[in-house]
Structures are given as C-alpha cells and as structure tokens.
Length: 482
Image: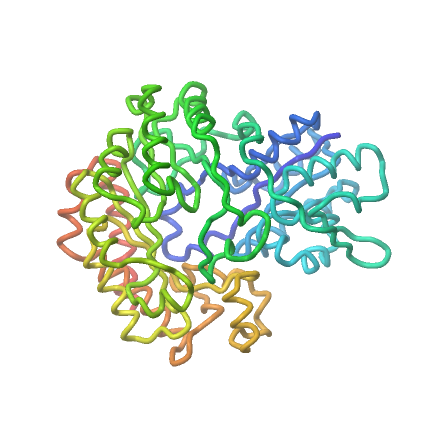
C-alpha cells in the first residue's frame, strides 16, 4: 500500500494581493502532513510527500512524479481560502489518474464534508485529526475491504449517498512519532522576514488546539482538533535537537496558536533548552498570550534564545473583544509589549477590523491602540467568518453572509482588502470599499511613522533592510492607490 500526501497550492495573487511579492518566501514546513506521513509509515504504509505549495511544480512534472511513484491513494489538505485552487488541482490529477483514489482533509473538508464529497474527484474525507483514520483507511484499502464504517472520523461515498462515521477521539500528542522531515524539501522552507532571525529556520509545534473559545476562531468549534493538548517538554526539545543536528537549523518557529502557555510552562521549557545548551546553537520565536507573561518570565525566555513574540490582540475596543469572547487586559498588554521590546525581543501583534458592531470610530481606536504599543510589526486583517465557527453560524442565521456568493471561498481571506475582491462579510453601516480602505489606512498609519525606524534600528541587517524596503514600498503603493 502506497500513499502520496500533497500540500495543495494557493492562488497567491488572489489571497495575498499587493503583498504577494513580500511573502514570496512564505514557504513553511507543512507540519500536519509531516505528522500524517510519520504515523502511517510507522504502520508499514509506503508514503511520500509532494509539497506543491513550496515546490510550485508545473503540472507535467507533478504527473511525472505521480506516475513514477504510482500510489494507491493520494491525500490532499485544504483550507477555506485555498479550497478552490485545491479542488482544481485535485481534479486535474484525477483526470490523468482516474484509477487512483483520493482523500481530502484539513479544516474546510472537515467542516463541509458533503460539499467536498460532491466533487467527483474526491472519494473520501477525513474530518479533524487524521493520523489514526488515514492509517485505518490505508489498511482497509490494502485488505480490499468494501466496508469503511469502522473508521471514526471518515466520510465516504456509497450507493445511498454520503456516509459520515462518528467523530474520532483526539490523539495523544505524546504518542505521535516526530514529523517525517526526511520526506520534505527542507531546503525550500523559510519564514516571512518579520519572524526570521537566523537561517535556516523551520517550523514545528509543541501543542495542539487552544484552551480559549473566541467565537471567530475555528478552535471554538467543539471538534477533535480544537482540544488543547501540550506535548511533553522533553519531546519538544528532542525534536529541536533533531532539527539542529540533521538539518542545521539556526531558528525554530513554533507554529502553535499559543506557546508557551503560562509562566510555569515557559520556565520549564526554557530550563530544558538551556540544560542541553541549545540556546547557544539556535534561536526561537512563538505566539502566546501576553497576559500570561511577566518581566521575570521574559528574562528567562530571552536567556533561552527567544528572539520574537507574537500576540493575537484583535482589537483595542473592550466591547468588541467581549462580543467575540476574547478576554484581554489591554493595559497589561501595553506593559508586556514595552518590557519585551526593552529586553531586545521583536514584538508583533495581529488585529482584526470589521467585527460585528464595528464602526468607523472603533476601527480608528484599534489602529490608535496598535500605534500606542511598543510593536515592531502589526498585521491588520479583515474579519473573516470562517465556516464552522460560532460567529459564522450566527451571521449565517441572521442572513448577513450572502448565500449567492457563499462558495466564493477565496474571499474568506483576511487580506482581501489588499486584493481586487470584496470581503465576504461587511458589518452594518459599512460598504466593502470602506472596509478595504480602513485596512489600507491601518497599515499606512502604523508603518509610516518615524518611531518605526527607531524600533527597528537595533535589529537591522542588510537582508532585513532589503525586506523592510520591499514592505515599505508596498505600503506606500497602497497609500497612493487610495
């Protein structure tokens, strides 16, 4: 039994818009596929990975690789913004290899399995976490079994329509083998310039899920993958050591929604790094909750090689945060950002414009709050009600998501304001043009300030200057387009 796992492409210009040139190096390790590959390989299944997102192969080369490997099953992953590009890719391969079975996974097929199975090129869908279900599917196909009803988390076609087996249980993250890095084109991976401190840089995860329940986030849905589970710290540090020894990593970027989580977790992790001497061999960065940090914890993290932290702050308006179940202490965040910058960390934060109830005044308050913080970088996204989230369900019930355009998934994209497309959701009292304009205004107001030069001076290198100039001119172009 042989399976090929494919990281599907995206339509970069449609999704990234005018920032596409800046993010051309945004090719990061597909940790989900790497875990799937290591798990099925452990069970004796032959497996290869095609990272089409990173390799960008012409279709004739894709066909040649598939023909040479001759898999029995091809597995694809898809998110909502890249779903259209993914299914086009799947259909093209199915047309050329009609005898090879197809399984799709990822957030979008997990939430909308019926729609995914309606595509004639798709034979199976695995919902939520896929390690166990994919291994069992490979086993059933290898044994020529006609019944798949014993595989939890699997959806499939039958004579009577679509069958959806019961939900799978969440996996024990401490029983998973390390990701199959040896099957990936590791030389191609990097990171956006604002999170790049040393090369080579690779991504990994130290946990799954999120303990918080923000209504705009897919982790608020009561699905298997949303359950928060931390990996054993020894296992995390072992994997970091593998990346250093085998792939010469100089930086690790933690891909978790939140890591480390809490003062004790941070201190235990940092102590483990320093005991191994890894802090002398590589640096690392992550995204976490600002409120869980204090000056003592930040000191330890810096000693252990931390160079950057990201925070998902979303809004500077308490009422809007409360409306989406985002619990933040905005003043404590201000203090933590200041401490982090003084300790030499590069601080980034994400903000969302266009929540239900957003007004022109509250949007400007969020922009002003971002400007008041000690941030090196800020990302301003347009609020996207992703299918499956509590916020999506609420807005759909209220008729605020236009049904006629519901399948135009490329518009479910946080950077839609920088493209030629309109947002899928626009709050009451706004036009699409006004919402797109406020996203552009946020970037120009935040970045075109003398203070930004002062913040970045201690971190400047030639490569950094070049990437910053590219970003600067892209922002300037947005200003003049307005």
